[in-house]
Image (cartoon, rainbow, N blue to C red):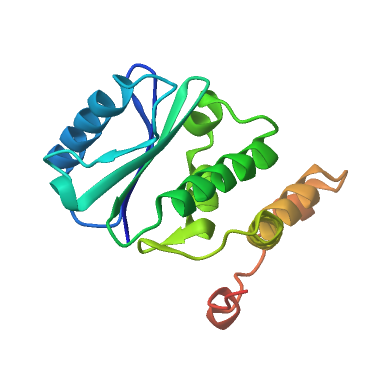
Length: 191
């Protein structure tokens, strides 16, 4: 099972973190710091697996990571997970982010954290791998974006209508006329 997914830069600044096991905020920061210290000291030509630090479970846990440009992608997993499977999952995660942001970089994770978390949630939920097919993940993300745009359009429609009426060249008495409120039943409708 996946216990945590951490993405931090070459200086140890967290850019995305998701814990699937409860740790308080201070403990999470300590785990990120310890994980960065363990991973950043390693050469690029050594294995991408190592035992977890003392804070995240010790020898029963593994840190599986990939280093791309300025970012480390680290998955903290227990002994039941396959190291090569997790490396492949990291690759799918990064390639999906590349497709979403057109060559993902550190700034994309900072300024579009919600989209990065959305991609991650399509891959992993509750510490279990949900989907590894990048085309399927991208399809789900497009569907979610369409729904969000549709919801934004519905909720903004009354304000746009009032604004359009006010901008028309109408006599002053028509522009000042108070429109009746919508019945409560219509306001309570959810789309």
